Length: 242
Image 1: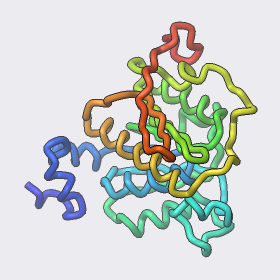
Image 2: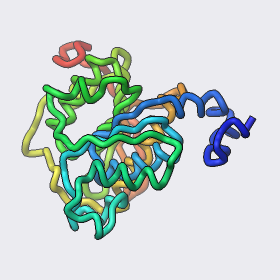
Image 3: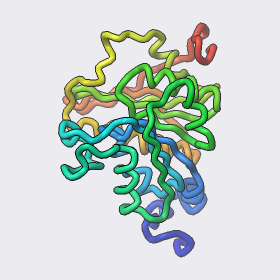
Image 4: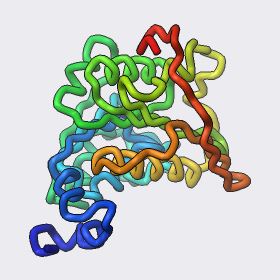
């Protein structure tokens, strides 16, 4: 049974929750990762290591020295280079079994649907709420499940959105508060790896068809507490309509 897959995925196939059928789903899946930074680094590495067949990386930024405390996709020689293309090049060296494409662009209402075209799942690894609202809208209109995550200081969260089934991003965060949009806030490098790894795990579960235990988790990394939070669809949500 194991011979039909690369030895790279042997330990996956041994798991009854994944098995050969699950690995085939991963190998045929297409994931879009928006943001190749602190969250995107672990997300991209673990999706690539899981053998997700096609990964599209979207990021408009370039590598800066201040990124290196948490964005381990890059090194000092990458400073000044486009994140999306550099991340794709590094991941191709890591796993030649999969297809990886790079898009250097800012995601907005005009291009979001097109950039998500053909995706089985989208992962929101961005650091601002405006882009999250755009991704949430595109996820709902295209029917593509979305995993969103955030990190600040010593805490983070992950949110799984299954269109038409679970609360959407705007159900939980109904209004944009610019004073709380802390894209440049402080963060411990290792802290970004926790929600990032959980986002990749959540994406694997969705692709394989494993049950999702809770759709919203708060992560306290000072006290090592992961708290599932009950979230319900809002009847008056302008994005999904409850």
